[in-house]
Image (tube, rainbow, N blue to C red; front, side, top):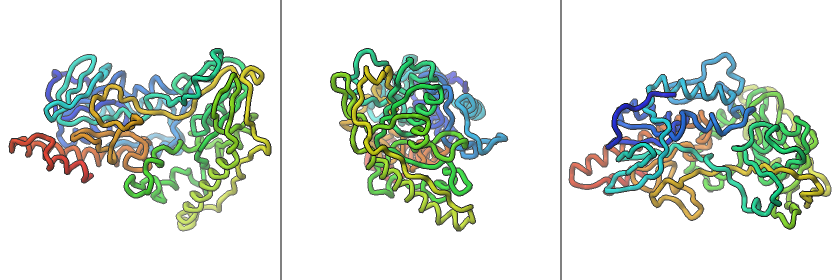
Length: 437
């Protein structure tokens, strides 16, 4: 559960919001630097993993890649994939070993900037901080498209937050909307439970679990793809919006893709465009979407081949192109096709309703430059492609957290000098740290 803070709330250098892997990682690094800080958590340590994940979920990354600053996996199954209870124990042990200054059951209700500092108000107390780290992640709320409002009232609608197992889904046909990792995993699990499944597939990232004798994440690291920085690519916003790759935390399948779930009996349709009078209307571009995903996978594998050849890896296998019916499904009738439930596997979004600092764009996204938020002394961690492609993975938080911790400490030192000279923390010297990480 972590170590509870016994001191009274009041003035402090840094408040970290969230005691998941990101918040605990930056807490560890701040502690090593002697920075006075507290970690506020709305529930328990690793709360989202405890209460907002389905029963069968496993990490997409192999165990050997599970690490946080100062701690790495040391079990006897390095090539396996952690279950949710195993990951919770890993994070719990990490917090306990580091004496993380966590206050659990503390829900932040407001963050405001006042007189050059941040006023952090929670259901328990109030802090005045020189800096704040938002380590609440990007997966707080399910991203459900507006078309959901047009479904007939009798259709049960769920998100991955609601789903625990096939038993929680009403009998009858199921429409799974979304073909990323979550969508395909849910579709496969429902099909194996004997359910009738239609999968609506939009843009997706096709990727094998293993390639040339190694897990795909080995190659993504060895080729440097996972280490690509946000300021090294042409369109980082698009990179941040890419769906999770079609993977499963298991080596029982060489590849989890549309071919696999259609082979189990799933009906594959294009993107769900609209609902009109109980009729579902799907995009006719499924073939093009799948061809593009196939092409991008082949480009990725070709890039890996150079490194794999140099390492003497086994020869590459072949992957069948995605099979698409000559006459793809364009419409379905909710009643006639017995669609009793819809699962929106359409992604997630962060929840900043408690953030009373003007740092959100018109779409509600945080304005930041590699986690350095558009307000002096405000930082973020754990967002997709925040500083590197690996940012949203557990193993990817260490490099990002070190960068943010270094920048934050520099900011604190700068603002202290400014204050000593009668200048507040918004002075140009302090602001220059925002651009230098």
